[in-house]
Length: 347
Ligand code: ZN
Image (cartoon, rainbow, N blue to C red; front, side):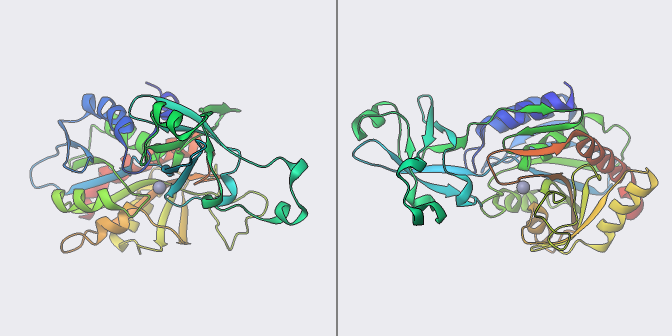
């Protein structure tokens, strides 16, 4: 399958943190033909291993499968659904969104209700409604009907956005953070045939709520090196200053130097930068982002694991719909492959 089609399927799938099943099934299909073995661990991380020569370094590539979303918190008497946020979501982008409630019986469409401008008071116009003031309307008459429709407290809720291609290289869709990392991981394992290291391709769970799956998977695998494959904030749009981020879409994948949870191990940074330069792959160095990735958790596993991050610059990250360049994703794949070929010389 072409990369863009893989990304489309992954993006359209739902995997709100803690409920990654649909994405894990897709990842099982994508990894199985290209690795020696696929397993799912106790918490739900999927691990595809491609074995290298004996005693070669063991590399953990981690792409989180979960996405930000919402969860049913309460159903009002009148049948409206109040919700809690799962992961870092800006309250301003919630209003008037179309969402899908994933009940145990069937998916339900809902609308996050808004008050029409006609009846908004002057001070209400200026105010941002917080998540706890908003509600989802599934068209139910009452709490009883909402329950009959299958709604239960704890049901995961995702944004209802379908993947779309824009122009020659850009695509827009849901949850590119981090379905693009999952798609890059699958492509790396598909194309990797000449590295002597052992590669664990791990689709991790619950990254958005605290890098949780990476913690147990890294402990279990005890790799020599960790590389997180993720999406990162792309600036280069009106209102974003270079001092906030220098990373832009269409300038190549980002190699993290430092973020809030990780200062990239110098050997891993060297490996990634050398791989990019030797293969003439465009790349950008990223520092100081107020977020983090699975690499932060992998790095602190057991006695420590030298770790780094390769990410695809993604506009409008952590909103219902984001945008990225397929060329950046392709260059991320090439960069990771080039790094894997060099691992044995470095470690
Ligand atoms: Zn992410």
